[in-house]
Image 1: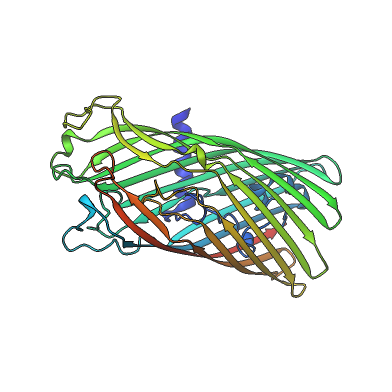
Image 2: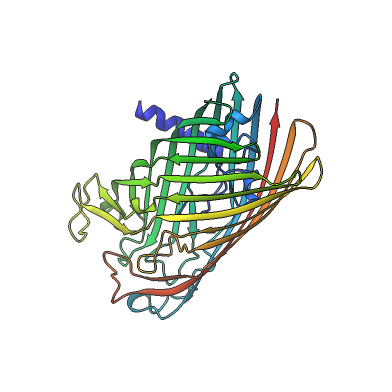
Length: 433
């Protein structure tokens, strides 16, 4: 059964992503863009706004506010930028490899899709389905570069299938919940200090399961509150560690690693201030402290003389994260320009889970501030087109790290600063019938 689910999830990944790259544009390696309508508001009020079928992800309880059947499909174009400047690296990182740079820009274009469906079964019950990409990461540096012992390419791709139901308890209260089937694929590459090994590549994947619950309270005719909780998902990743050097045949191994993606909780408010203005706000907590360390264990023996041996159960790699829980705060507004056109505004502050002690070039994340603008246009009675843009001002990220276990810091430290930013362009079409 597990193999059947994995094959189905792999097929869903291919269909949903179609070879598209992932790029983290929220704290940690979460992807913050989960609807085209929300981008223009910096995703403020996500658990209380009921614009379209994307509520199937943000808060299933809101599905009781949507009549009939609705579908929504979105595409997000992301451009994160991570540019490294050295600040006095030592030891193995002091002199960069011949003909190298500082890695150029570790960010790249990414294309992330979402799709949602909701339907009212009867006046009390509603059903919804979300197909989206909640986690993703891609950093890749031009080689050779000074920090290649710590990271060359880091890539995480995910796809989430989330059916849900909602029940209208009363005219003012609705509840909802759903299940998530989530596939995660990860690949990490780096150089090694041993010429016979060449570059190393860790590649693994798994399917995990979780749930989400939500509530909506219509406190006043013009004031609505919403809250949602999304559970942690545990992965038992399985894959391979492969090397590109002459000793690859005696060093390659099968591997496994346990990884948790975090739980989260959101509280939102949506207020109709006047016939022209709508106001919204949101606070979201994410439990990134669940990610402290990633220990990769060999499940097949190798004969290469690794420190500590290469038998079954030995450690192939160990990555320290020591991440903290985070908070995201956002506020937004909509202005009804006409019966067909709505202008969206939003700002948000998104904490990073990383810290100056354990941050690495794999994810040089820092606190970020979103500034967003969007336009909604209704070309017909049943169709809605949303276009949103957001720029993320990201604090410079400091790194002072080695490449454990063979290149510890100190005495060998990659010491520098990443200048970061990100741009997001979202397009979504929604249709009711």
